[in-house]
Structure formats: C-alpha cells, structure tokens
Amino acid sequence: MSRLSEKNISANLKVLCSYSDSISSCCRKMGINRQQFTKYLNGTSAPSVKNLRKMCAFFGVETEEITMATAAFKKLVSSRRRVKKPKSILDNSPQGERHTKLLESMMLKSSEDIQPYLGDYYYYYFTPSYEGHISKGFARISLVDGIAYSHFYERAEPGQAMLEGYEIGKFVGVVFVLGERIQIVDYGVHCQRAISQTILYGATKGSFSLLSGITLGVQGRNSRIPFSSRIVFEKIASNISLKRKLKNVGLFEVDAADISSVIRSRLETSSSIGHPHIFSALEN
Image 1 (cartoon, helix red, strand yellow):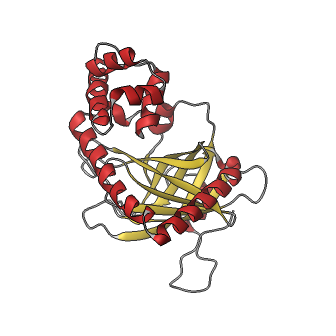
Image 2 (cartoon, helix red, strand yellow):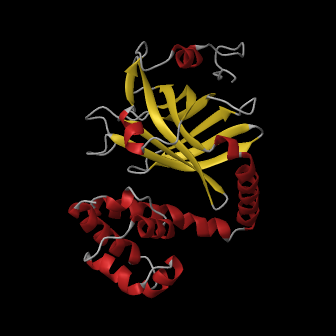
C-alpha cells in the first residue's frame, strides 16, 4: 500500500467517524482494538487487509473507495447520507412498513435463487455514447448477509468520464431473482446522477456461459438521454485477479476480435415480438 493511500485512509476514517456517536462504540462493533484503531486514525499504522475489510463493511463503503482523495470521498459519503434521509419518512409511514416487508421477502427469496449466478462476468452492450461501439465491462455478483449485490466496472474514453480522473466507472447495486429473471438495480459510485436497471433471462440448465437481457440507463454524455440496449453477460473464471480482468474492459468496434460472433449475434438479433416499438432480448 502506498503512503498516499495510507494517508487517504487515515483522513477518510476520520470522515466516517464524524457520522458516528463514538469511536469506542465503532471499535466494539467492528471487533478492532481501540488503540490499534487510533493508530489508523493518526496515520501511524496501516490497517491489514482483514481489518480494512472489517472497517469498510461496518461503515458501508468499498475498499477501493476508502483510498480515494479525501475531498472526493467526502462528497461521496455526504451524498449517500442525503440519499438515506427519505428512508426514515418511508419507514414511519403505514405503507412504508408494508413495502419494507415486501422488499425483505424478495431479498430472502433471491438469496436462495441467486446461488448459481454468483461470480464474475464480462458484459457487453451497444452504447449510445460511442456510435458503432460495444462497451465491454466487468461485473461481480456476490452475496453478503443474505443480500445479493452487483459491482460493475466500465471504461470511458478520456474526456468522457463522469468525473475527472475516473476513466474507470464503478457501479454498485442490488440483485433480485424474481420469476426466473435476474433483476439488477444499480447506480454510479463516483457520480450519483442516474439509476440503471438490467433484466436477464435465468439459466435454462444447470451450467451456463452466457446470459442475455435488456439494460436501461442514461447516456453518459451531457445530453443524458434515456436508452435501452440488449446486454449479454459472459461467465468468467474467478481465479484471475481483478486488475487483470479490468485490463480487458473497454470500448470496441462492432467487428473487433475481442467481441465473439456469438455475443455479437445476441446483441444484434431483432426482437422476437412482432411489434416495431417493442424491444426484447434473445432468450438464453
């Protein structure tokens, strides 16, 4: 870990602690010695990978996020705090309790059905931001404490990133398996300007390599045009480092060798519904 990363972690931990009642309480709940945690806050000691994960899980941030420059990290954390405010209003309403129970029920059911889909993928879709190009991103679907999460990584061309210095965009979300369809709702970590939704067909047999579906989002350029596109998820081995996987993420011309003919065919196949204004995905 670099000295700059250690310095950022120290400063960012102080930001996170400012939202808590007491440092002692945080340490007890995290299971980290108070004296050791104080060293992390002062920057005199760097946390181990295990303790870093403990702290990130407790405060609800990613390990990649806590090493961000502190100014950007403050914006990220404060925006999430603002987003959380309406939740208390929903919880206190008669309908809020009902909706919460329904969501919990869907999450519990999804945690059982998501098991075959956990792991790493490349995903491909036609992007409206770069005409004639297919975006190839990296996705990870994981299960933590009964809730399924998605982590997406995409690469933008220099000058087109949502925030300066973030050519790799990161998106996190929640995953449901409902009616044999995988449904993902996610948002951008570095710039919360839109929520996207992806719906994939479930696998028709025990083993699978590709999942097809539709993604709905907002164009990354200033025009912010809502769009939908067919999308294909390609299952990949998990024993490869994240760094190596991200090297293969990028924008490719339609006929590029990096895009297999099978994936290209699924993205280009016309709708199975005979209506000119309805856009559908090719079944697995």
